[in-house]
Image (tube, rainbow, N blue to C red; front, side):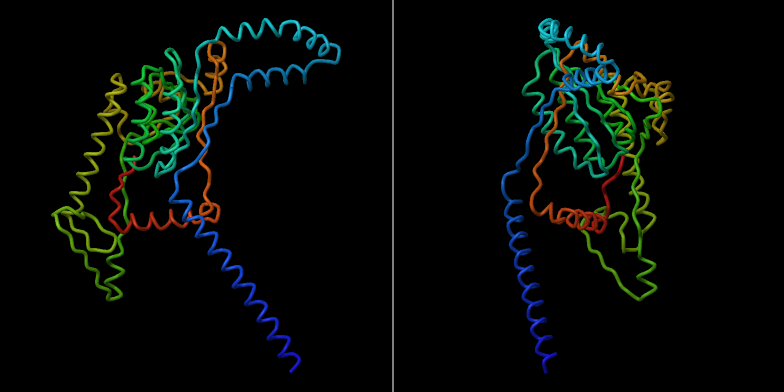
Length: 341
């Protein structure tokens, strides 16, 4: 009896703890849901990259100099501080630096549009913009919008440079070709001017297990290829023709922005490393973003600009991940019409 009593007491305590924990989770999720419905919030961070370069230079000198040399250096530094400040004031133009690390769904374009809007609000004539692009591409509508955001910089009359340190392929190159100047590291991956779409089909598996699947549409080509239905040659043909249309649009966009390209030679879906991409005129200069910025620091005041969104409680709990999986699954079921560049 004593054992049963102690076990019952332990069970009651355990249940109480579980209920209390569940109640806390429900309260947090509820608050997170309300926060989702509120106005978006975030911080715009503007930092001096020129100061960072100066600090690195000073750290290097202090690390290499002997005690006597360092003492002499600090003395001379103090004497020339005022002069250095005066020379710094002669750099009246600004170079704004943005990082774009793109995912397949190009969700980063929401941050990009805020950053570009901020630049256009504060930029003056003769200021310039460097966008460091790193992306292997993704959905057409997402990267098309990203490219349109970059076009806003040029429409404002500001010189736009795109740097490719690692990869700007497909949708990433769609963004890059908008620039007045494209620089790439020697082994950066560039190009892949092509379109791809892929979709699984489980129709044979359903038939094997005697499972019927029905889909009703209004409009001859509302659906071409499906995940669960039986695909037809007519549907495949229409699907391929739509793919070709997107490819033509992609080629026309690149040609408009880089008319010197032999588009039929580079729009094969292949990619090239930086040195070969230079030969094919996909890029203008072989150079890393670091070298570009070090040289630019001599005549521009450099600033990195970043919009940092505040994470909601739901995101901290990992609900954003589950939402993403759910959305992806929904897109597959809907027919996967998101062509990918």
